[in-house]
Image: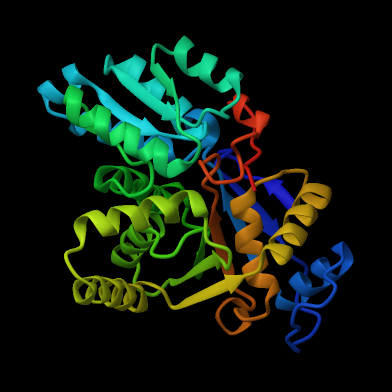
Length: 335
């Protein structure tokens, strides 16, 4: 089903012509039933992988852009961030490359190999705190005391802007023979800045393309816990918070033609299918495929060309003990 594109940046998964028109909801979803369903939908799927980025991660775009936007004083003082491993390695790599001092705060339970890797890249590593909130508090205190720029790997505006360049690059890499009808953007968090800004880039480029966000029902605790703590610090009252949430909801209604929620069980089935049938393992690809397997997108993508950008290695609450995060050449994304 999958063939390498000539530029090694887009991978094309082309199903057979549609064999039927009846939509099918999630059943047992064996590998054969997944293939059968995809053939019935009759779609062409392109996977855009971040092959040229450090750690094969979209976050490299955000890190580069953010470090380049620092003032001279900020560059001299350095940046500080919290991480479970993936983001830290990318930040340390480019911090060393651009001559920006990097401090990373991690949980005490972080694997020593990850700490050693970051230190090898010239970073100061502080392994303290029993949970992510304690780690976050420590990082903010150090930032205030030493005048460091705190860099949030998910919600820092420049991190989001940098990662959104993927949305522009999609169209630069497509030749005139390839026509994209829809883009599926996977995420593990609600109100995801990255998917929204990529959607903005796509919408401005071609407003006729259908944009779909597929979101896991289980929200990533690593990000949510930090967000909730920050809301308590910065939002003065509940009415403002409700208004903020409604504002985000209105933006999403404009940006996305549909938002689909997928359970972790279906994501795992999709991941198993991609690994056994297509020989690659990427959590975000599995999220997007799970969205298709729900049967809730057939009216938008049946017999269409669909592009799925893969975000690669990113921090989440499941990779505190994930030793694969030490392998920057791997295409595996944590799940």
